[in-house]
Length: 476
Image 1 (tube, rainbow, N blue to C red):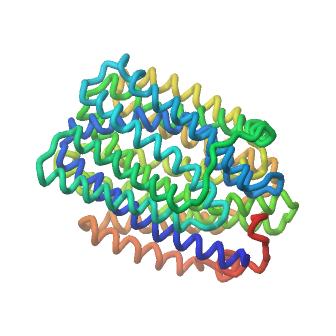
Image 2: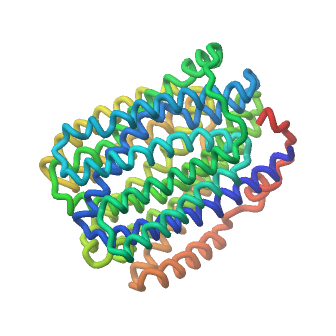
Image 3: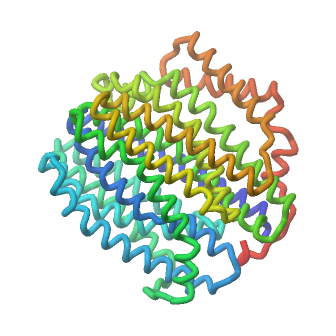
């Protein structure tokens, strides 16, 4: 397979698909926020926050490990995937099976506990979906996975809109959320081909040896990234939870950009590193760093400047108070972007064990921070600890990546992107435009400033779209 063509085609599919699914998800999210209001939307955030915490906690690194191991030549691809999928299925059944029982000990309303029981099936299905995504990502063939996600989002928007028109209650809306995810999973099953439940001992042993550092990393990541959304509802009103959750959902959408880019590049970076292709590794390393900066830096600035109108768009006037929460939370994206980029590179160069110290210390400090500051300061305590934890992880993961790869990223392009983003932010702050005109003007200003700075350079575009290395598909 011609790698450049496959990468460009796969990237285009993911970007277009993710743009569509993100837009549909945003519409569904906004409809829910407008219809439920801040308090009942807080119920939704509490329920999904709890399940999200469990879902990320039990990921154990299956998604990234699937891509990573399938990129290697050691095992038969079919046996490898069947073994990984079987273990994924078993862990998901156990975890989401007991989730509705665990929540009984929490002091939440009955509606929240019932919603968690209903949506446990949704998160179980989403967990299985991640196994398919890891497979298709490694194959640079994301069309089926992308169509599955878009199908689920279309059903989600249509179902929520229909129930809202019929003035349905909170729990029927949660049922629609679950049914949309189930439909997405069914689509993946029907299009994947033959899947067998099988556990190969040799593969399982290699899987757990490779995965345990990643599993611990994921557990630690879950604590410092998700614990606030489990702890916060115990100490503040559901209205405050709704505002905080709505603001955080905007960040979740932005962070997906970094996850997509590094998810696409990680098998290629792994391939280059594992075969000692130093020049190719440096190119792909730099591409990841520059692309993350190019896309996320202006988003951080734009969200900070336009936080208030963004929150009004999401939930209406009752969510206006969430603007200040979103403004401060946006700062954490800077740390997230570096953590996402260099965390994937650390995995690609097999330095997961070294990263455990970073993730473990971050999880410990952050958990203590949440337990100390959330009871005293509410959402302000949660935001402060979140900003600290993301920047802390980003700095030290960068250090580990540079130390063990012996590649220090070139910073000239990143600094120019930062200047362009700040220039855009200043321009928007002075104009005081409404949301959509401000977004349009921001894109124009950002693009113009990048053009003045010579970004992107012709050689960078050549690296992305004109790679000349041929690679056998089964060895990608």
